[in-house]
Image (cartoon, rainbow, N blue to C red; front, top):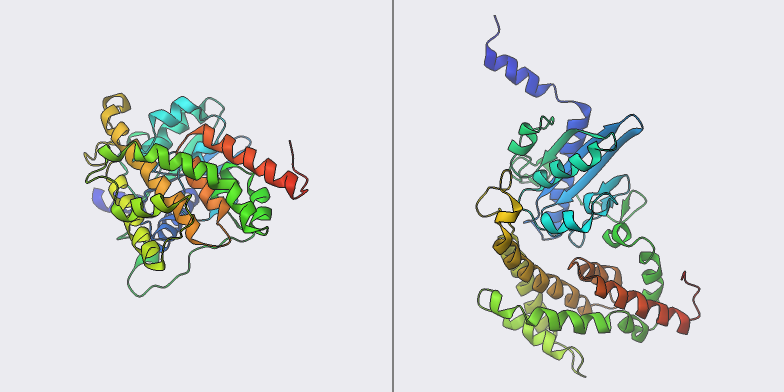
Length: 338
């Protein structure tokens, strides 16, 4: 006779191709985020099937499926928050939710109405929500179990190539190639794309200073104060800025709704509104810090600066960027869609 435990172990080993693919991708995303110095990012990957085909969907547990700078998305997958089925109400409800697998399962209910089933998933967080939903899954894909993160393993993260896409191209596919053209133009043209957005983000972020533990770091405030003046931060000031921005990312991650309490699999978002407000305040300051950091480079990394602005969820910032883009294109006599 075969012991029950051995039978269960055998079932565990008979992992489907879908579950194996989800696990491999979630490990790759986790590894890429580590390489990009954003190790606090959590991930979930789901494989959906319907009579019409198969689709892989990814999400993080920051913002609305936020992708960290330097992490490039496989062209063959969908980023959850970009699905037209996901409306603003869904985004607001699950913004920054601590358990990315929970968001994936909630999203699967939207897909189910259209004949899609979540058949397998993998996550860097706990797997209880996947188990309870009857979704095939491997054990939690934590950093400790990630073969790409083991000591002595040196695997490069995916780069921007024919197989991978920039995060802004996922979010604003029609704007991304237009920004690339401006990066080859005069620096003053580059500045015009983001100058107004930079000022607006600084103004909005400084209103949240009282919510941030210890206030906004002095290294960040110093650089923000210089913006718009005829002075440029020194190399050391930018180095201090980068260090403070990374620390703020970690502080923000710790404030995700249902994260600190480890209740993301079962908690009701309506019971976490205070946590969400606190997280959003930190999120706005962190994304402002990310956006302003782009000013340390030439040419300006316009796609990443614009993505940081978009990630705040403020639609007015997109309007400002597009308006500036059209103006610059007209001056450069570039043809642009209207």
